[in-house]
Image (cartoon, rainbow, N blue to C red; front, side, top):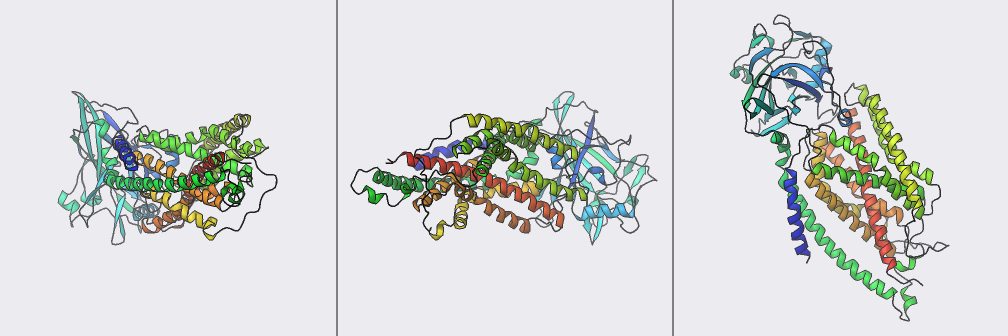
Length: 634
């Protein structure tokens, strides 16, 4: 029976593979006439070494011809990501090639960077910064050939420059390699945007008006090439040039993102292996736990419901003995209800965001859409969180519902906002575009206090008017003494034991998510993430039920807080792995990037603890109500 269920479940989830490849564009396709101008925009500069993004014009690059920098209006997610989309002086026209063109200044008037400006550029090059451009909402990509393995990979953006013998050289010539798909006889669509970034010394260039002649390809890529040095001692004189090369392609407009998403598709087999392995372990564990728990519970319930003369002896041990205390309200009931309410909010936000992203509605073409959706969903889920938090609070005999509602609406956002506000000072000190502007902070506060907070209060209002959750047994007036517990029921031991299985379920996806967050990669395998999410829910629920059952068998009825804390035990493993990832995978050495990583990791761990702790609590709560409803209580 178990193998049959597993077979059909695997057949069902196999459909998600096709969902993974399904792409709903984030914007409508744009058709261009031949010769029509296509705007080239700059997004930002990024580095995996510093994790501090910068605006394109934070360095003295060529300005647009009219000298006016125009910032594109951005959504909330784009601003929080550090995107600052601006116009550039590059002129590109549909299906028209450009051999080589001087970008700005005259042929006898190169750009002069001062010593300070040169040092700034050299520092960015040393930290391996990438420049990100857009054409028709399509990000630029670079083909990078590993000199050791000769493997070709696709990188987002192009490298600002390179280091050689301790000196910095800037890539001052961009060769745009563009692809178009012919929509009809006179309409074209952009379906590819790559760049070859070259470093060419100004003395190697020959100019004819605003056109230029570069050294031969042999010289550019060979040992005889003379790249453009960034002189940190006396300043730098250089030219910026570019060329454009168009080519027709069979790639459709809807498939033009495949080259970027393909960066993760080579790891699909790893995802499938991880998920199938987790499912097999989960199903067999479920079978074992079901047999043990059902048999044990059946024996217990049969004994407790027996009219045998030995009833009194039976009742001296086991989980039935604490029936008069098992539903006794925990200490800090208001805080407990607030924490569970926040967990519900995080759970619903995560579930809906992943589901919508799995359907392709939050495609990478809509930059910042995923983060914007997550924030808005969290805000509007305050209504449901307030409702269930209120019902739990009234069940625990709480009376101060207004204070409880305020705590529910503020406890988690306050920690997140406070941490981000603290880190923002350090980002501001580095003049990074990753610093959240004051206006955006005010917008977030308005979402919090003007929408989320009232919705939580509204949820509390309706929740308090509903009947509290019904318990199958009454609570005694005098609490009973809890006997000394065995060593393995110590809360720290329980956390370590309970966290292993859920962490094993999310480990592989966590690795890819961390790569997307810190290694400047796309993550778009939300079909896999959706499956992993439900594996996590089931595994946490099972572990929570088992832990609470053994706790009650030890006549310890203080399960409320413990079920929440122990169920979040996988967060400890996530914290340990994140620290391991930092030291083994990332190349961060400076204080501020380290502080940012640890700060955001702390928020991630807290969020995951809230999520899994809430799942575990409701699983344990449902289990306890079921088993005590099944026995006869005199």
